[in-house]
Amino acid sequence: MILFSPTRHVALPPEAWDPGRVRTWLERWAAETLAARDRQGWPMHPRDADDSDDSDPPGLLQCLYLGACGVWLALARVAAAGLCRLPASLPEIFAQVLEDHARSPGTGERVPSWFLGESALLTFCCLARPDAQRADRLAEMIRGNRANPTREALWGAPGTMLGALFLHEATGDERWAELTRDSAAALWESWAHDEARDAWLWEQDLYGRRVHYLGAGHGWAGNLYPLWRARALLSPEQQAELRARTLQGLDRLAVIDGDLANWPAQTEPPPKLLVQWCHGAPGMITSLRHAELPEALPLLLQGARLIVAAGPLAKGVGLCHGTDGNGAALLEVYRRTQDAVWLERARELAMWALAQSEAERRRAGQWRYSLWTGDAGLACFLLDCLDGQSRGMPGLDSLW
Image (spheres, rainbow, N blue to C red):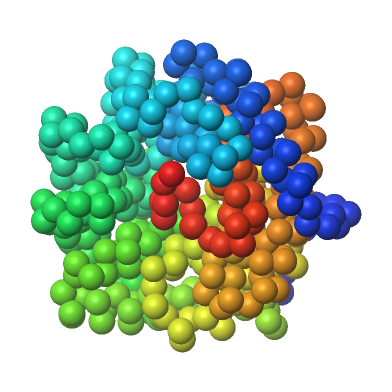
């Protein structure tokens, strides 16, 4: 059984891990990115414009996913590594990003979405410099999005509840714990048993379709992520049920061939097997970062072997659906196992992703100024590879 489409991947000549070349890339990317900045951010890359559903996509975006917020997060990490200097303090930077977003939202209107809307921006502002008014606005936004019918991370409660989680982890304030429980309760209420597959699934009402997605970007894995991260805030009964449903679903939904495993993009036919963070084994691995499930490790290792077997993605760089996102999953396996082979494999993907980034830079004449679809995400991945550690997915597991 073929668990991935070879046409979606490329065979590139292996390159030895070169930390000097990686640091040089990071310094150049940061310097040129800061120099290219407009007062309100960075222009959209032609490939991101081509992927946009909007016939006239905005030129400047502020969001976490592919806007200024995500680029600044990456630049802050590069600055913390001593490879660049920020032009202002983080409180000043994120306050300006929020102001620019409020003036001209990339989605056309102000929406809660963690990735594309306002909740991440408010969270970053509150973490950088506490502000009661912004905290109230964020709390209102999280509460109002609890029952979003998409039931997935991009637009729905699995994304916006991260604001409450980050602030509860930072402050210990019960207000944020209660908001986390409230969003978790909404997810729990919509979690239904699928008798045909003998697994607990969520139905997504997304872009005019009703579908059961399984990946990190839009479905099952992405919904499990905040529940496991908030596990200590759940009741003992919920904790036990979360464990049982996760193990059951991992097993029932997996497609296995020998020592390789993958998970389809959705339960509905035709089957679509991708190897990306948003759909497939990489996102399944990273979404269970906070899940203490030793029983699941053999299956997750089969998913990691698939990532290695498939090789770099033809799409190039991008945490969401690119080579560095797959490398981040291998770093997560290294964190779990402390087996150095996974760090080596992650660094192999890092060198391939670096080469893909440089080739696209020459082709387009600009960097792809985006955390989740471009070079800012690659910068975060390369820093983790340099340090020999996984900080998880930037903007989800860790910030600056």
